[in-house]
Image 1: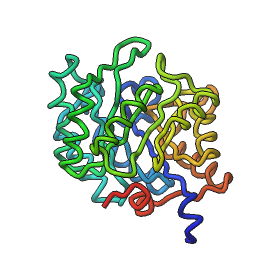
Image 2 (image 1 turned 180 degrees about the vertical axis):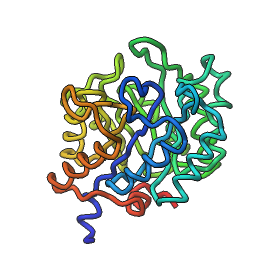
Image 3 (image 1 turned 90 degrees about the vertical axis):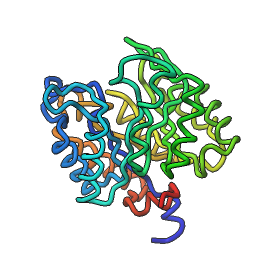
Image 4 (image 1 turned 120 degrees about the vertical axis):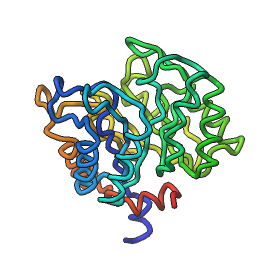
Length: 282
């Protein structure tokens, strides 16, 4: 592929299950390690380069954070395909708040996945507070850097970008920084074209960025993200519908739609190997 095409490639991330969707909401939501591994492999074949992983209790389907579940899924995906694996460090499935959760949240880093999510800044969502204290913002990138794990910087509002820039300036995040612009999560920044343009304008030079939209905002946000030269995220964590009132059949169905859209917009879809080069991940 020519150099110009390489620069224009789009990385597709698939967020396979998250912590909220249930099989009652959509029977296709993967819950067990076996289901999550198979979903990742199917999405890799459909065009996704990165799998973002949350784990569930296989018996109850509830959000979990057991290290053995993360390990089983990480190893299972690596045995069957070459996609990059991004393990969550969010606290949604953990009891407690603030600094007491930092060691537990950072346990997935010890497995040395390719990436880990790194949520910056606390935010009030519609029904709970997502607490990411300053101590977390300092310790998490240091731990990931020491383990050779790339942070995926998830930001829910513009102030979070300012905090990330502070960490980048301190040398705690290796280039290129990788931002995930999380749009449309109440009460984070709303998923509007104006807001996406604003968020993009605040990113530091040399940034690689991606965008997600929640629910009905998924398709508009990834379309605009592709047009603006960014990367995109889809999957059941963000949206359980394929179209208005129609449940998605699988994560892979959403990846296929995203890959088709990217190609139509003249954005070649990056393979996992190409995504590694773009993100400077060995």
